[in-house]
Image (tube, rainbow over all chains, first blue to last red; front, side):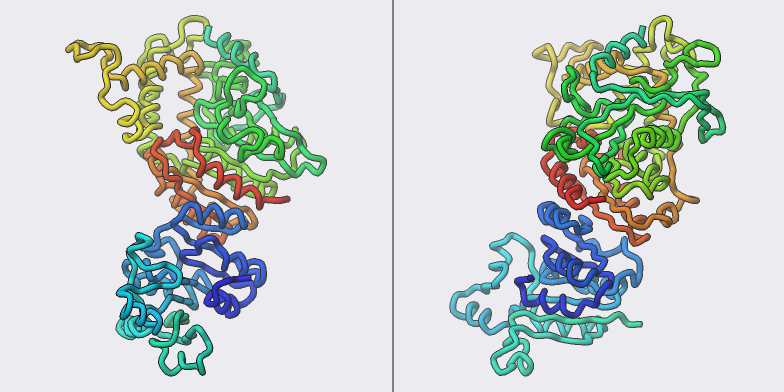
Length: 197
Length: 375
């Protein structure tokens, strides 16, 4: 059972026996679930050797690679789904990677924590720092981090001509305020992008 | 005499066994061997379902002695093979054979030619990686092993892994090639050529005819010194020796070995002449040079007939003889055929020889991968 809600939702969307590429797959939780439940043919990309060891222990296929170098070793349209969950924050050139994802996969699922979530705004206003639930902010975990919000992501897609086919905002409660004011009320956002053809 | 030396070494290995093939063995070159034998060792027990066998291929100067076990001589892969090691002898049945052309008990240039009763020398036919692998396949059949959990090896051993899996994919569940390439690069050939030239230039080499007299130790020593530089990295050499002087507190302004790195290389080269045959060195480096499994320069069709084989491809960050880029070419070709492939670059500064050292990351990556390979 997956702990993270965005992963649960992505897992529901993926169809049986499809080919899935998980970018920044971490310990391989999602891929493992997909292989087990949906019998997908999965491949993970990960940079951390410790995460790779965990993936191998689960019997997953995983390739050590720096996503900042793109997906040049992947053929066009070679995957049904490409997943980038809570990893876009750490990519130095997000638009290039997304472009690559759209080249290599038929559907791309991108999830990230929305920094414009109201709790983050309050935290910034009163405490002077953004407390991201997962990472505790970029300085603390020592990684270079993009400041991603629902609004900025949509603007990026518009500017680069990426077609968003679906949007999922979490949490799904609070009288569905996330639908009306997604940039304010969604903690995590999932965007589904389709390749152009 | 050099051959007595090998006999002396081999006698110290209680587990050593021989597989004899008494029929004509056809080689890739079109030439034949009237018969051959392979020296091999096995560790662990083949289980009742014969489903726990692992085949390990050695590199250029290796032997079947992959694991020390009860012998006096250390195994070349004691870091990886043994009880509770990744290639766990409590769990798996480990097979390692000395390759054709080598001097540790298998038929090679230092063996007797049955056709004339003399030592082969340069009458030994040129062999290729594929010939080496084909001979080992006969041993595997002889042992009654029908499935291999994995085949693994580094460097030239990795080339054998690749050749094995494209030829015998049906009996091979997985493959772990390390620090290797799908073809010998220009750079590899260049270094092999210089090493061979070092041997040729020793007058004792005498066109490979030296088994009744002095062996070309000077040439072989120089070859090994050159080779040894390519097995290390700049980092590790600086770390180990720097510019330290060996015996004297200051520079002598003489042509003697003064720096530590000089005496280290000489030591490595000299000890090598006491454990390896110069002709074997020539034949095996030549086999490496000929290796190229691409089809018209393209590696993708090479693997197109594979289906269910799993791969774990491993490179070492400081290896400049078989750099990460060469292993990534293999990964790319496997991936392009939608095969199950994992790839890791182990971050270690020991150069090409990194696969031989104590390395936690390597051990964990391999044992985690193996956990999921089942017949």
